Structures are given as structure tokens and as C-alpha cells.
Image (cartoon, rainbow, N blue to C red):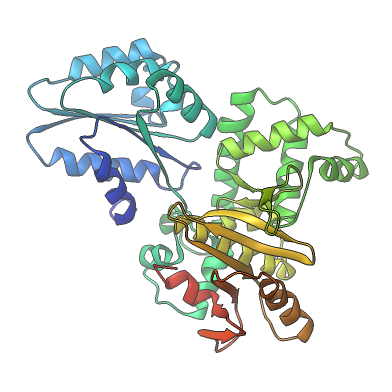
Length: 402
């Protein structure tokens, strides 16, 4: 699995080496951060002028490194001032007070530090406080559709797209294969690991049953506008009473563990953010499918929307949900360079009602920014409808510049 290079991420890592900047690889467990670190390790070890110090906190041989003092001792024993030192630490959040060591070694001459972590809040807040922002966070996502084809040695086809839509992009599936029972078992194991290590244990969760019900609720309502109050009302209908505050806390824990992404609503005409009713998407749509359970053929709209969202993020967009007086735009996407696009995601656009909804909402936006509808209409590659580009999902997922 680690033999396959995800070059775009390696290029981002290489860009910050030698810049006195701590490189932090973040993302949900099992999205490929460890493999990325191992590939960097192997590349740097091939140069005799380098000294690589590698720690993998998921391996029992490193169990004795429990806090920053242990980490200091381990590094100091292996540090070589006559060479360029690379300090690589996988799942660094499992070392108590790791920030103190990282801060200290960042100032050493000819030293680069690359760490990985599976908790957004801890890595961002603690590192910022201790080292004044001298770090670069690189967000690792599950496999894109093109990477999925490469990893599984598949050709681009409707069948391959169907597999990607169903099973998702966790790299570990390369070893498991794409048999449905095996995939579901693998997803279940990943889900249990993330929930236990990055949510339950970290935040000392006692109401585990509610947490699991909440995750399944979010899986069932992927891409739907939800609020803490609406979740609370649903849970009460299931004979489970939990306050809105607890719900928001639990959702924030899932967000910190990179299991879900929260997308805010944006008033397109008023140019302002709304403060409630957000949408939630899963880091990996395959894991979401397993959590939702069953064949769930009616869920295809949700799956497509989740895939489109993650691809837009992968392409570097900041993504929000667009609010119009007459309806909703699935995604309002912007980049720091000022680029802005509007995107609607749908399954099939055949009925007049569907066409009117998807194209009509975009058509009501009176500006000149590009507007797209992404669907799975048969025989469609790309077409134009009143200035709105209609593009097939496969075409969208295989275009590197969008």
C-alpha cells in the first residue's frame, strides 16, 4: 500500500522542508498519513547526508515514549549534528506534552520535523500557542477517484465509479480487496478505532450509545440542513433526551477527529454567514455508507453530494452552502485568489421539476461567476444550458483543474 506514491501530497511536504517550519500531516485515521511519513522516511534515508529519527506511536516498540521527557531522551540519543536531521513522528498526539519537544528541536540547525496527528483541535491550538504559528498543516484526505483507480488498478468506467461511490477511498482497502463483506468489516473496524481513540477516550465520553446514535443520524442526514435542536427533537422521539449543548459538544469531537466536516450556510445575496443550521459531510463516503447500513438505493443523492464536496475541498476550495430567497445552492466555492464558482450536485436530471430546481436556482444568481450542475445523466460529458455548465460526475472527478 505504501509503495503507491500520492505525489501531490509529497510535493506539498517537500515545499516546506528546510524552511524552519514544522510540517503537520492531519486527517482521519487510516487515510494514508502513516504511509506518507514512511515514504518520506525512505526517501530521506537514501541520502547518506541525512539522519532520520522515526517514531510510530501505533507500534508497541515505541510504547515507552509516553511524554515529552521520554521523547527528548529518544531523540537526543539518536540526534547527529554532523548530518541533516529529520524527526518524523506518527500519531504524535499520543505523547503527552509533545509540543515542548517539538518547539525545542525546531530551532536546531539542519533539522526538519514532520509529525502526523488525528485530532484537529489539539494540533492547531497547542502548537500555535507554543511555537507562534511556525508550522504548516497539510490535510490528507481519502483517495480521490483517480487515486482509487490507480490503487486498485482499475480503468475509468461506470463500473469503477460505482465501486468508488459504494466503497469510498480509504487506502487500506487495497489490502482488503473490494468484496462487500470485507469492506464493511474494515469500515467497522476503522469506525470503532476512531470513535474509541479519538473521541471516547480523549473526551471521556460516558454516553457512548448516544454518541453512536448521533453518528448514525448524521450518516442518515448527510447533506441535509440540521441543527442541535432538530437532532435533540429526533433523539427525544427515540426516547433519548440530550441537551443541545451536549449535542454540539459531541459534534465538535467528531469534527476534531476528522470523521465529519461541517459546512456553514452563506447568504449569497446578503454576503453573510448564518449561525445555525449547517450541513455535515463524512470524511470518507464509503465509511458513511457502512454506518448508514443496508443497500439504501435512495441515498445516492447524498453519496454524490458527499463525493462532490470532498473533491471540491481536494481542489483547494473553501466550500459553503449557498442560501437564496428562492432556495439553496449546494456549494459556494471560493479560493484565496478570488476565484468563485457555484455548484449543484444531483443524481439524474430528467424531470422538468428537477431541471427547474437545479438550473433555476443557479440562474437566479445575477453575477458572472461560473456555475455548474454535476449529475450522472447517461451519455453526458459536458454541455451548456443557459450559461450553466452541466457536467457528468465522472468527468468532474477526472479533471485536475476545475
